[in-house]
Amino acid sequence: MEEKLRRVTLWLKKTFGDQPIPQYEVNSRTVDILYELVECNETRDRDVSLVIDDMKQKTAEYESEVNYLQDLLMESVNLSFNSLSSTGTSYLNALVDSAMALETRDTSLASFIPAINDLTSDLHATESRNREMELELTSLRKKLTAALVLEKHLQEDLKKTEEHLAMEKAKADSRTQNMKFLKDKSEDFKFRIKAAEEQLSASGMDPSLTHQSLVSLSEKLTELKQQTVPLKKKLESYLDLTPNPSLARVKIEEAKRELNALEAEFSSKVDMMALSVPEPSKRRFT
Image (cartoon, rainbow, N blue to C red; front, side, top):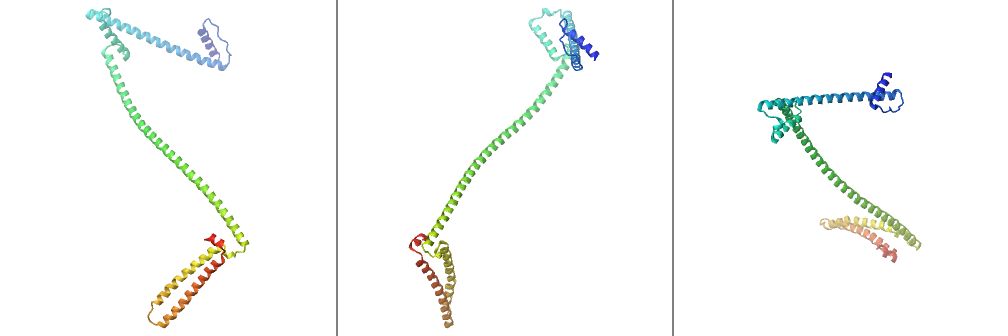
């Protein structure tokens, strides 16, 4: 810790110079933090120094290249940079800018050709990546379009479902109200029928003339009518018989008596109903 504190103190003195060093709490944590800051700062200073040295070296190399080219121009064609025309100067500047853009060491063809080849390779690779990205983008657009269409269809289906549910709910509510109305009406009719039966019973009406009794009697009459149908058919078959007239007449007489008995029973029941029901009740049940 003492070595770290010593380096931190020296760095703070170097950093602040003649300015007073701010007070801080000296403990292991603050010393470690300041020591890491010292190392980072010294590393950065070294990197900056290396970059500066490299720039100085490149500057010296470029100046040497410039002097060489100027001497070459003077020796070859007796031409100096100052004597160049504006067009020549622009060409020379373009050559220098190209060398700087391609990051070549000099302006010779041996430096330009590999740099241009590398740049061309990079261009082809970039174009290939761009084509791949365009294909991916096209695929994503198609998927996005399909997703949007599906979303639209789902929204339409959802809207139709909600409308259908609303209609079904309205129908269910209407059915519920109708059921309640019919139930109330049924209870009311039961109460009225019971009250009417009690009123008729109090007025001396035969209990057999109630609605339920009349319905039961009507069912029995219908059953008797159905029973007479086969007897009539049987009688008609006997009437068509020609041999043995005496036996046929006996059978016919038996069938007639049975039919007459049933018709008499049927007529008596109908007459009893007609005679027993009072006028108001007849009007009500008709």
